[in-house]
Length: 463
Ligand SMILES: *Cc1c(COP(=O)(O)O)cnc(C)c1O
Image (spheres, rainbow, N blue to C red):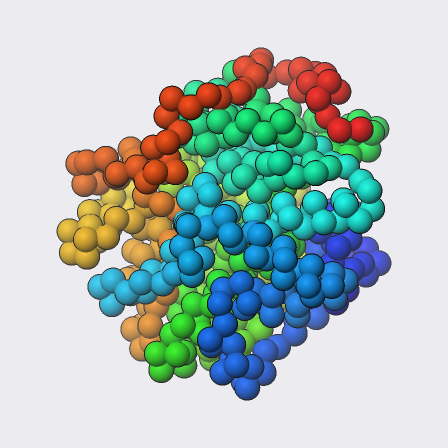
């Protein structure tokens, strides 16, 4: 399989190079040259595979430059870090299916992709005898999952900036208590936006970027999307085994990352297996406005109890736009230039096509907390606020002609304050989180000045 850019100006490259490139060199996002399809007969054969075996089958549709044995070995190592034998188990509650994606080392769904990405980076760097310094800013979840994905890996150092005392205490501990010598945490006296701006400054200094092999680990990497496609297919096969031939998925999303993986899964499976993809947003409703009216226009970010979805530019949206525009890279390039100029795109002319793929609902703060409370009372099951947004959207949007699978993207204990506000008690900390309190930690506290990060990387980076 070869990979091309959504903006049409990158010569086709193989999977390994696509993983290392991250963002396409023409500013677009990488996609496979075509989307393969899974034949009907395969579904029966795949029904009894373990998560890991299925992952290898699905990944192999998109990867032909890594020997199968090596791929199997990487997949096994990636998911050995999960605490549930099924990796992403599914449970039925109150007429809905909950797909639990939070059994990884940092208890959020980002582990599913970042555990694999860390191993892919290490594999490729080993082949080319290369080195990489990963640099990123986080408001909480992504940083800890990225650190967990690359801790102790050869050829990789990771530098993660977080806003000092502005993440939840547990989120900070999940990062700073990782003491592997290749992990460097910096707490910035400032906001997440300050930290993000510092990272951007260094990436824009191309001489520095090249000299220190700076790498990113954000959600635009194709390997992250690909790793997430697997659990949609896994969940569908579980329900197929129970006699269901068509399902809906409800997905709480901000960056269009997780839901785009669902779109890819829908295109891979035979027609009708995945019916609707319900795109659930919080008060930051950019994507809901797009689905329901074709209005893709930036608003200002509002802080909610589901902070990992407090986003007003969906970095993976361009991938879906490419298919909406009939794979016309020049048109996508024009669209993205227009969006950069005006902060808005009118896509209402394409609405009938969007309707084939998505339903959408924006869920308010009150509805989110009420959903956590009701589900806890009625089903004795605690939803985290992101998952609650998806469950609420499912109840409002689905036509109930087929099962609905709701993606549970984080463990509720990661968002104790929201749970407290909803049900009046703190969630019980699972051992992985409880053990963090009082552990030795390591972190540099710095002012919001990119030069401090530059000299820190010069001192501690691989070269
Ligand atoms: C990152 C995140 C999301 C949103 O994921 P997208 O890639 O933006 O779709 C939802 N829930 C949790 C808990 C997250 O960490």
